[in-house]
Image 1: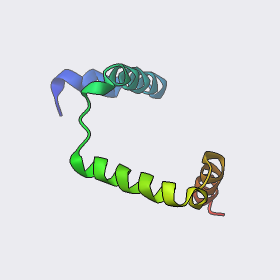
Image 2: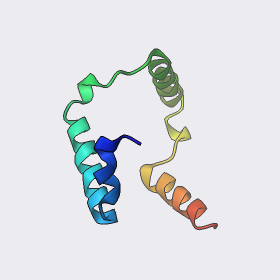
Image 3: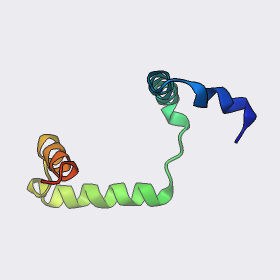
Length: 75
């Protein structure tokens, strides 16, 4: 383990969560610096084409969220 980061592991859970949130927010500020790989672009293009061919084939965010939650709770 990197000794420079040792203090991070001594934080409370609440402090760690806040640190993660702060880190994520700082990354979001420079999202243009995050590379998108060619295979990711190809996958996005493929999914967009599939959606445009059949817009009713997907699920709304609400339906997808409910499906995920029900799987987490063993339903």
